[in-house]
Length: 338
Image 1 (cartoon, rainbow, N blue to C red):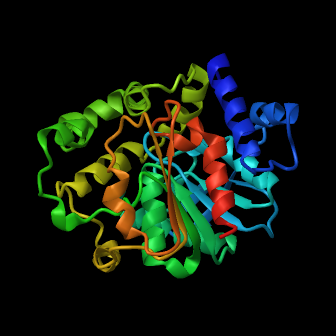
Image 2 (image 1 turned 120 degrees about the horizontal axis):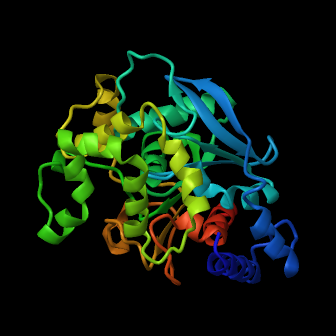
């Protein structure tokens, strides 16, 4: 981490504490120690068989604490929450951070299972993981693919969810509109989606995996001054035998350039009828998000329960939990008290 980002994390933590976020009773200089040691407290990665997968995950905090499921996106990994998770664990939450299918140490149990990246596949993985861990209900939270997953789980299985924290809003995909074109400027921002729709794109991603990821990081968070060590920790998780297949299928499926896995047809049909969630919900958005994302006004009506949107300034980009860990943790702590 650079000196600039370390300073920003310290100021972020201090500001959160001043706003009422007591981080394990720490204050003043102890906050800096919390920020500096967060990554050291993140781990180890454990494995558990759940549904179709052998899932790699990190668990922190007391087993009897309020469960929180934290989901990463693409091309990121569980280190998105390397500072958020220890902050929450210090407040008594049971924090679970899984590698999604196609990432890190998560593996398919069968070679015959389609490497689907569609939204309900990831959501079904989540329910299987919760069952395997003995978690009945949890706060769902995430960004990028992870925010979509948190929203899909909340929409399909509200009885398994306590609350929802989502970066960039209600991200459930509607395949009925898959062939509806966007404006040229909006289509341009999705360039990688169309690249992946070609065989050339699949080969290019496989050949330039880490270079591709670094480029996306800089495009999505143009003001995030991440260092090589931060990037390398996450990029190592992309070296997974199923990463290319899952990522490419995810983007092809979105635009109807690939079929979904038939085992999820019923879930997709049910999800298409769900237009909102009624759980307590907080959405967040950074002022420097360079990835395609909707305006908050476009999704506010999708949240029918107690709801709040929070805009973050200071150059916060797409990978919001890693760029503003204290603010993300505060949203989860706040919503747990609603």
